Length: 268
Image 1: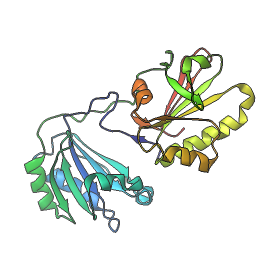
Image 2 (image 1 turned 180 degrees about the vertical axis):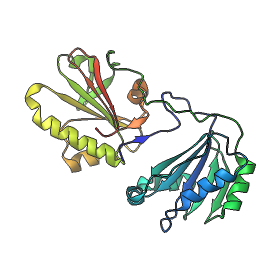
Image 3 (image 1 turned 90 degrees about the vertical axis):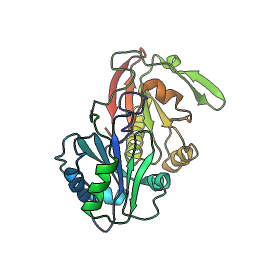
């Protein structure tokens, strides 16, 4: 578990429209249910379509999952850990296993609650998967690259007082984008705290930008963990969108001249 990525927004802020989504809530009593999906997809007449299978499991299940080979052209399998039941709430999945076929627009076009045999799944794929499209992948990247000036933004540095990032020039800065529910992000913050504690005399400034919703959780976690560097609540994703962030944690170092000199995607 090195990090979490928004698979719909790799390198841009546009949702991809050329992909079929199969979202499957795995049966905690049976580790082979994602394999049943792949077998049914391999038997489908639409197996050449662009398909991303997302297998949703609990964090405990994810830790035990072995990699599954995907030998289907134009298809891929991704694992998603259902922290805080966010996936279940979104799909109103009251029990597992459960399987959904979803358009890139978010429209659910087919669902099956409970275990399905391969013939039912194959028939559903034949009827509902969109033909065509290409499952393309690209490297994670931000709107800024190493060697470029860090985009400027305002943030609250002291209570009720805002400061611009450019005002920190002359001191090295580490900026990390994170989500409160991500174990990888928590591990990254803990590592940054250790670094922060050992570089107090070198002027290092650490900015932890909590990306998006659930802003009440972030201060509570900071207090619980005893983090002493700066927490920035980016509720409207203004800073995250400025930097083109689509994965968490994402950490970058900015030198004394305000230039990005290093970018780390996922847990360092």
